[in-house]
Length: 275
Image 1 (cartoon, rainbow, N blue to C red):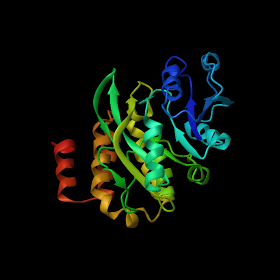
Image 2 (tube, rainbow, N blue to C red; image 1 turned 60 degrees about the vertical axis):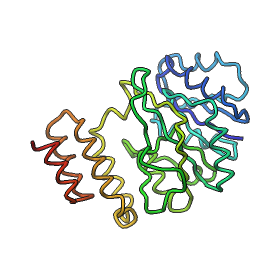
Image 3 (cartoon, rainbow, N blue to C red; image 1 turned 90 degrees about the vertical axis):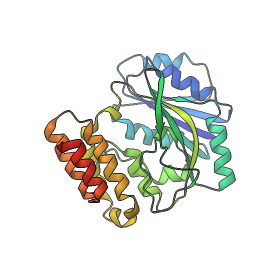
Image 4 (cartoon, rainbow, N blue to C red; image 1 turned 180 degrees about the horizontal axis):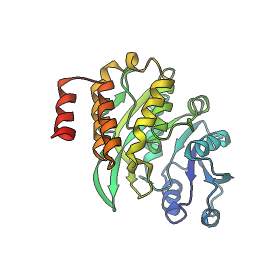
């Protein structure tokens, strides 16, 4: 059985779409653990409208998405655990394909690519940096969406999400997991990643805080992921470009040199932030 953990906070208006994309999977042996993170809307009523015995409803005091996911993990009874977000849509065969990949490859965790959706239109791919196969231990597991992950239950029961992280929670968790477990990439985009106005992904000013926490928690980060430093620097600069506050944008742009001082990093810095 696959336990699917779905945290939600005041998303009653779009929650049914996510629930339906889980219950409608071609792989049927699942339990859907919906963790209501102290919502003040009619989330409980929306969940109650689904008459499916596979649904487990858990309500907690508002504590954030990480705590909600960890609560869902604690309730999970399946041999495998997957995660969904309340505003995203799974393709119908997602779990079937990912479980087959897990079993055929012997991987501990499998993730897939995502279609980036804005206003119902596909505007790109997420995780397109990775290619089909196992991630090398020195390849940084960055830009992998939580809603794409399916893994053995022991992985997530050992490596929980860190509520201290303001962003990159799945990234920081995967950095820990990668030390002991194998991660496999599927090139198929099996998730529609739908950006909302209140999505954390559109709040890039938290990037600097998150990165400082990651480097503090993982003092061997630069040694382990030396080959990924140029890629990380570019990602930091891309995030900096979208910050409206000049001081924060400048600080984040300069922070990119912590990862790489290559000619490419310098050229982008001059082009994007100086000229």
